[in-house]
Image 1 (cartoon, rainbow, N blue to C red):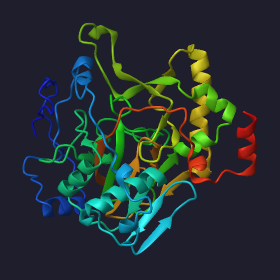
Image 2 (cartoon, rainbow, N blue to C red):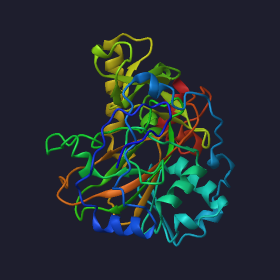
Image 3 (tube, rainbow, N blue to C red):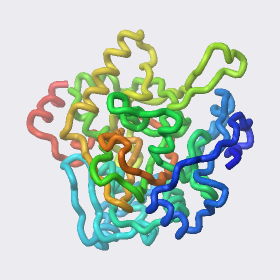
Length: 384
């Protein structure tokens, strides 16, 4: 399939390529049933922008964003009463909804799902019968769909990204010691002017053993910090960089460079009003206003708080046709490559872009908002 630009400003710099991999059976059956045209090959490959300025110009403007969770019934009666079962997987993060089909949710239920995701960070649905087209439609409820100029898409459905590790391995081959790719703690699209909100990943094909995904709570990571340390980072900003490098058009000899945006280290979710630590080791580069040694020291500690506290994480074992919807504003995630590419894995992903990140010094933590502070926490706050 000949690459074509997703954005008219992007000049095609990639030669046409033919995929030689065979689609996993379950994935092919799903796509064909859903009317996806595979005649010209799979996936659709947009042309890849070469220069920084081309990518900076994509979505480089302020967009209004009203979070659906902010208009939802706080008790979420329409959503939760319709489910056969609601399973909270850990105390701090992760909920599974049983007995509902995402494609059939009413507008009210979609709003309430948005609030549930904002509160629980990631929500899971198994045994979903959902087309890529329906997945995109649901994503549009939560914000403007991100159409990525760098990654494969489902043919005819721009904005529905193909997540197919075997395909990615043809460009960057993973191994046991360095699995690479998504097998690292990260948050999606932090380099955007208005970064990612809700992401929906639907996996139609998964390994029988392994390939789990882990999420960690930014609310809880912030709450792990002492009140005194929170004062050090509250209101600070950092530079967040893109996953993909590009060239400076005027100085290409300087080599690959990354898209960079300045965002707050601690942000507030518009639906819950709670503070969350918003850093990730893969893409948070440096704290603005600090020397490199100072920045590296603080960021290293913040990364560790997020990554090493297992009580603020959830690990999800995929089953075929399961969906996960998570909020990139309050989480980071990591994919386990313990299946080592021995079995196929394939899915489709849609990401809705949200508001420009903001900080509010008067916003509460999640535990303050829920009124579940322990005696020691109350004492710590009183001493500040």
